[in-house]
Length: 354
Image (tube, rainbow, N blue to C red; front, side, top):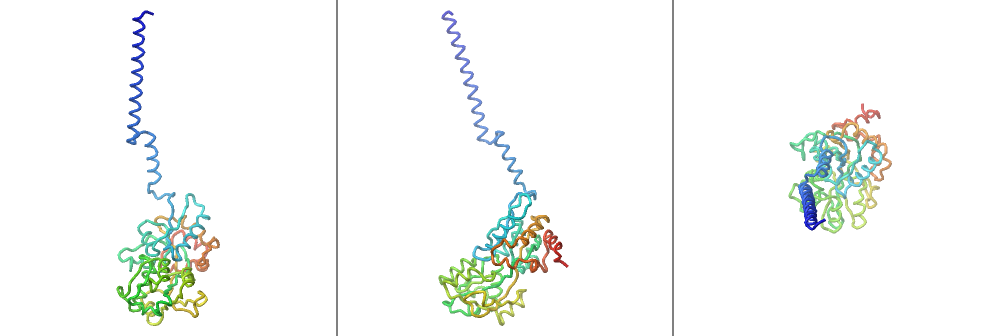
């Protein structure tokens, strides 16, 4: 090959390499631009799947929430154990329930009413108020829930310490008083009880905390009294009694008469054997803690399984209040309330309804 031919061959080879390089660079730039803008096929497909999976079409797959109460009360630990029993025994596909801390009765019912929660623990009297649109639910009646079962008797326990020198509810004028979290049955009941003893809002310094936080304040001398609708015996009161001389403030006499006249709470004696530090019984008032479920978010089949598996496996619950969750008590607190269709089916199968 002569010199002229060799030069031509070199030029052709160089031109081909330039074309190849330009083509590769263009393809790479287009790919980078697509990924930054989210326009590639790989990024589009996962987005469609997420949208389809999270669509609010009423189907399963979402976690069921059971609203309990503040961490220092009875609802919270009991709710945790109830959720565990349900998860261990309900075999519906995708079923998954978790107990969450809330401000208890009023809060749980309000969340159910807004479609934010599936299950809730509540005082049955608060549920009646929600249904009627009264008191805390004035103008905002909650009708999309049904009774699913009795849990335990709720007992109003009003305590102070020997250090405070207070011996009656009437003496709480000007005192620092915890009435329970906003949106709880404890809160509304405490306010009513104080009013029944002649103490209006502003006559005392109100704290709105969970029972556990308030017990700590009592122990430290930063609170004079604590109101709480709790099971008997209440662990926080027992624990506090190991640190301070606990005194129960009774609901009796004219104050009790006013409570009974203006509410559906009934009188109950806290017997001395409920607490080691009690020497004699103490008069107070009581209601029922119940389980309610959304009739919008919990279908009949799921409601049936929840009621059946909870009450037929209640022996798996270690919390002391579970002793009240018997077939003999299961519909206590249901009077005047709608039944959840699934629970109603179970009650009928067990011959519990007339």
